[in-house]
Each structure stands twice: as C-alpha cells, then as structure tokens.
Image (tube, rainbow, N blue to C red; front, top):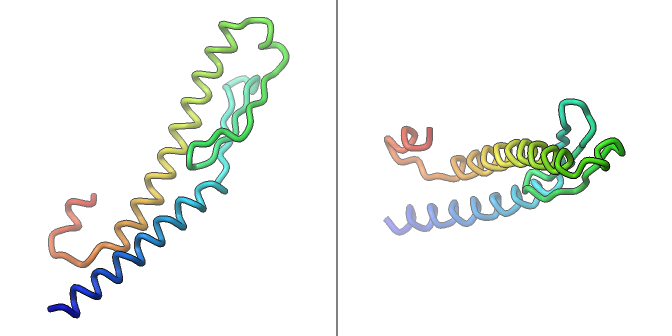
Length: 108
C-alpha cells in the first residue's frame, strides 16, 4: 500500500518537474501573426509574452485604424499561443496521471 503511494508521489513530483520544464520551453516557442494585409506583424511566445510588433508606416497616420489592427492581430496571436500552451501542458499532465480506471473519460 505505501509502496504504491510512494510510487504515485514520485510520479507526481516527476510530472511537476516536466510541467515546469514545459512552461520554460514555451518561452522559446515563438509564434508570428500578422494582419491580413501584412501591415502589422506580431511575434509572441507560447507563454503569451509579446516579443515584437512591426507596424507599417501607412498605419501611423490613422490612430483608430492602428488601434483596431493591434487589437485584432494581438488577439489572434494570444489565442494561438494559448491553444499551444494549453495543449502542451495538458499532454504533460495527462502523461503523469496515475492509471485510474475510467479517468480517461474525464481528460477528453
């Protein structure tokens, strides 16, 4: 009984370390997003840290248009980053879960 519990605790610690490593790795995954006309480009990490924004000079004359471009493009980039981040962390967490019958149905 205690052997099983110790094994599960060891597996939990291992999974926590893998989650931490995955979070650190997500800082190196760079996603690029741009407006449909390529006038605004954004680079963001999978941990949702903005790394760069490139704005075409033609957008600098219209503040409202620039704001709209920023909102739309940043939201798309954040959505992509969030999806990748959640999928990666879920995969690591699922891998570290103990084998409990019926638990798979809750993780889908």
